[in-house]
Length: 365
Image 1 (cartoon, rainbow, N blue to C red):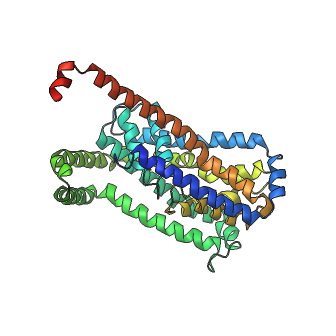
Image 2 (cartoon, rainbow, N blue to C red):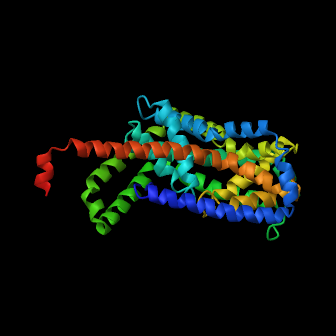
Image 3 (cartoon, rainbow, N blue to C red):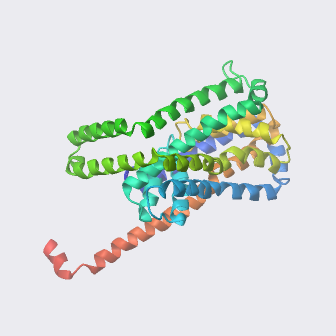
């Protein structure tokens, strides 16, 4: 986990995110093919909706944090709600800097550990939050179809001969399979425990460092197993239900960014239809291999939304506002928080070195 959260790796992810996003946005500008119209549109932005979008971006923190709090309190006596909100936002921040959101889980666990939550509890909470996310989309997908996604999406798009509705069903199927696997982990946690023990044993043969810590690792697996068992109870399933419902607010910036960005550039559209299209885009971006889906998000969003709602000339401005709500605001604030963490850590090391007696230093030499 430490290597995933290394500042150098996160900085590299940020640079990749920015570089690929710039290339993707350049492609969007070429697609718009009307730079004067883009400049004129900048002067007509409805800034009140941009402010709404900035507030919406905070749901990465508030919604995700409340979900972590609901889950953690089931196996932890009194998790600090402020620390849980921080863990939700910083998890989203690290996810934007790593391919396939791979840094989200480790950063969430690290943030919880900083506020006194034990590693097994943090690990279990993060796992249950992932299950809640998948369950939310597995429920929201069919509900979207009932609300008219078939009619709305089936008449738009032609990607390799597929409509937006075909892509919607395909991504929903992937989420359903993942959801079934994760629910099995709750119902039959012994299977996951056995697999993790076997994995730990194999890793111990390949790494001396892991071999030295194998007993502690096994104890952690067993404790996490007990916490997962605690969720296979009426109270545990109720906590998971609340977490699933809170996955809506925690993903509000992803699902509502499109509608807010449309209003910011002066376009009115049917709210439910835009929500369905944004759900599809969210589905697809979860599997993007670049940090924060950089490049892919810009091109996918502009291609899908311009085929339905946005004139080509306004596509670059819409994409810029949409991307800001989706990730730029969280990236900026997350970097402030992470920088403070780093300064605190470095200051603590300096103070520790200053407190060392001179004799110890001389003896070390």
